[in-house]
Length: 193
Image 1 (cartoon, rainbow, N blue to C red):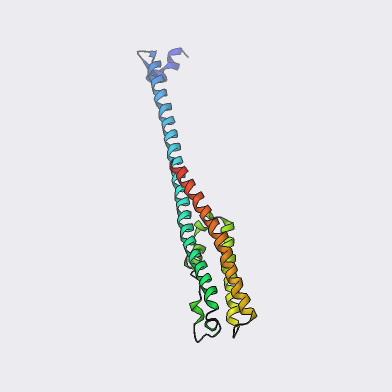
Image 2 (cartoon, rainbow, N blue to C red):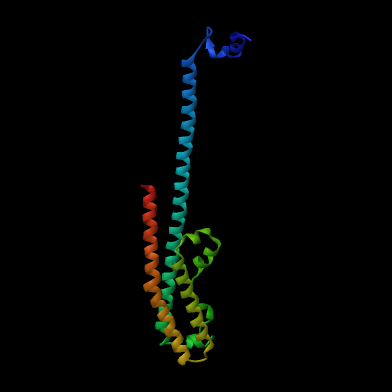
């Protein structure tokens, strides 16, 4: 076999029988540039998508925390009002003819809705635990109050404990939630910068 028969299939690689290295070098550079460009563009797009997703999750968590904070704040105020009004009208708690049990109910729309949201897991677990404990304590003390037929030591102790739970919630939960909201704001600002 001669060198010409071996080179025949590669004639397209040459012009006038001479190899065209400039052409193939240019084509190789174009191919590599295209591959690099596609890689860099996809990497940049991926980074933008990840940052957008992170921003969206943090924004949802912040909005949820602000809504929950408003609900908890209203409930703390409600419990404080109940505790302060007990002295003036204890029978409103003990006689269901004067005030039905439903009138002493905490607002828990956000709290209950959070069960069905994956955003809940973006919130600080310590804060969520504190809120759950506050709601449980209030319900427990309300139950004791409703079981009494008149104002007695059990009832007075229950209303006192409810007031303490509200005071603790105001100094503990509200501070935690404010700190969480500030942290989320800082993270959102960091993503935008």
